[in-house]
Length: 57
Image (cartoon, rainbow, N blue to C red; front, side, top):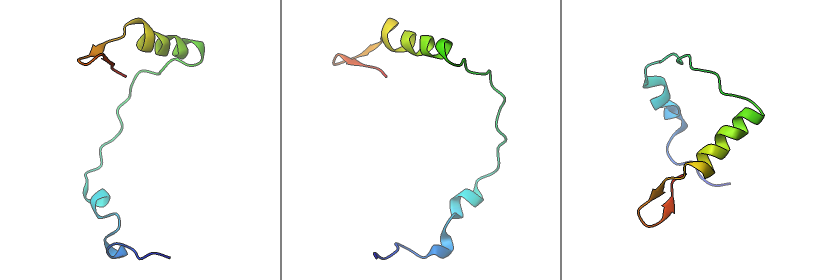
């Protein structure tokens, strides 16, 4: 097996340092057919093109 880069004593250092932020409540996303409808509109109906003729995803 290969060697591990750095010691495992520091594993998870950054995650434990970051302050805990509670998740915000947001509006529920539509399910099933309604979600597909939104995706279709987003992808094919109001297509925005970036310079160079590239489509923005």
